[in-house]
Image (cartoon, rainbow, N blue to C red; front, side, top):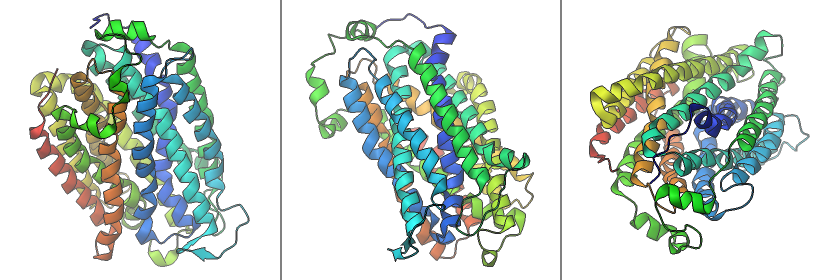
Length: 446
């Protein structure tokens, strides 16, 4: 295997487009519950609207991995998928926040009005395109970065991810501050949210184009030499089915997947219920006031600020991970990070001051920082030299998507049992604690 190190600039260029992709992802995660509640969805059933994003990710990312493993063309191996995903995402980001503006019949189908159906399908295409654009960044690190620098490469990616999240989360409140309306007629998405999606779309395409034109991927011969393998084109491993590939997966694929299950289920609950929890705890909102009330929409903006605090906490914690790694090892810092996030979730369920609650979300950022970088570092080190690296990373995305699907289904059941949205943040904290304990089962392989 090639031990040549890349310059920091090349490592940065490799992941810079991730900044724009994460702005889109942040806008989705912070505003989807708000958007569907505004369109008329039952606030108690919001978790159902979160089934589609991880479902599409679980379907799309393995396919992107499988087919990009075989795509050796003049534009690159992963970059064509990156560009196509970004273009689709930009188009959908222009349509999704306008779901309430189109002239639809108000008749219901399966309990949803036409505007909600339009929003649901827009969300499906948005998450699909984000997944298509997101996965190539992780794959290019696996393709082009040696084991010594892989931790640094994913840390840069984690930093850019959190920076993108920070910007995307703050967009609605920034646009409100400069005078763009944060309230709208019943069933209409406020202009502050619409302009946030428009700005995010512009930044997304510019950032992706930057990476597209500044990164030169390895050709088949260079890739084979870099990874110390035979010619990687037309190899039998590329044609193996995903069931056989999973059978051959290293044990860390499954043990990290167990940790991932608890972590991503917890964050799905955060994305689904934080808006209602903060509206009730910090802004005095009651359901009878409805989702078009000033209190609910103000809480929607503040959710973005809370998630931005999480992003800042994540960036700070990510910068400390190399130090903690020397003290506690990779598994130790992974478990500690997740446990700190669990404390943040439980605290967020009880704090009623809108400013003090930012501290709790900053603690949640510790878990997020570890989730973005450590699993992929451990897994790609174990997969080093595999000719199906992209396919494996795509399949590994199932450990991110499946727990969100399960949590989406279970969320409404928990609410029907009388658990409040604030209580769901406590449930998220318990899930993270289980994830921290599960780290003990991981056995690193190099």
